[in-house]
Amino acid sequence: MDGLDQIGPRLREARHAKGWTLDDLASRAQLSVSTLSRLESGKRQASLELLIPITRQLGIRIDDLLPAADRDPRVRRSPIRRHGLEIVPLSPEGAPVHTYRVSYPPATTPPALRVHDGYEWFYVLSGRIRLQLGEQVITLSRGEAAEFDTRTPHSISAVGARTAQVISIFNETGARIHTHAPEA
Image (cartoon, rainbow, N blue to C red; front, side, top):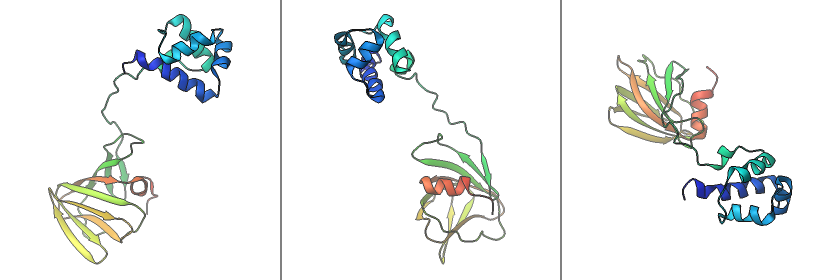
């Protein structure tokens, strides 16, 4: 389906969103029901002469009937600083998958164990990471990954004298805990 083929279905969708029948919209836009029906079904080519009164009545723009232009796929979001970490969003706001680059500064003592709803997955980009899951302590190096249920008491910190960086993927709850929780 190319862009012009989408005009009719998008008109129909906008009309349905208003709860209007073909008769309702045709009357408001001063068109025949037949013309509107043929336009919505793609049997009549759209013209400005037809679309302007229809879009005005629907409260939409003509641009709303056309496919979106190629959007810029780059993610440009500000880093978040939380609990001494730098958390850089790598996915757009509202994305179904929450992906971040997290920098863990060197720590002499690991943070306290935390428990919250969610799941977390991370991949170590650089440095070494200490992951404590309950009583189990694991050290991960560059190229290693871990995935766990965050209802298990856990803590994550850098091991050694340098910052460690990971790519982390959270579900919605995990992202909220890591990026919106108040400072402790």
